[in-house]
Length: 245
Image (cartoon, rainbow, N blue to C red):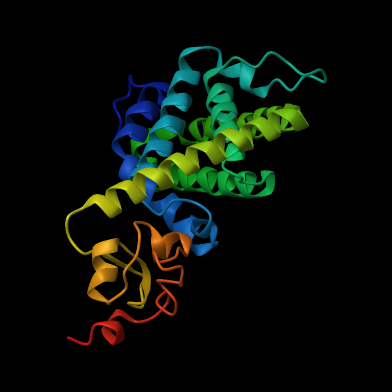
């Protein structure tokens, strides 16, 4: 049982910090069950970072004026509380990645569900403050929804275009780094899908298959020096058939 002198406001932040793994696993479970991981990372660390940032924002909101979270003025307000800052930052990042408002909003609902499930599962920690803690956490998520919907719609068409252009440049840079590493490793490398079918192969690997080619030939659908398609019929083939040995 919590110490009688400890208020729920003092108990909530350390509870969220201690149960970071619990929250991360619960959110990821909800995301997988509802199909969100087809569009988001399945790496556990990515979910841990988001949970840590969200918990830190909730804890910071307790330090200021929690009552402000219930304000929803008619005019677009200057939202500068920690919860709003977190929501706006995450909304901008996800929008740049091509995530829709409906998808982002829906996933946030499952974060909310996981946090409330944690409070119920650890009711003994919060004691009589459980109801207040639940109301506060729910208010945090309502504030986030309000904030990111406002900011989401504020991006102009040009802003969207510029954001997509930046994201495309970043993706191109990541692709180039991947291909540079993949093609310069001094060994034959085959990249396979879950079924063992060929997705990519570097020049040394293609040489094992008897295909003379330039670096990146299979990735780009490139051509051999003589002009013929150096990689015809390779993509999607089981490696066990291409290299029976």
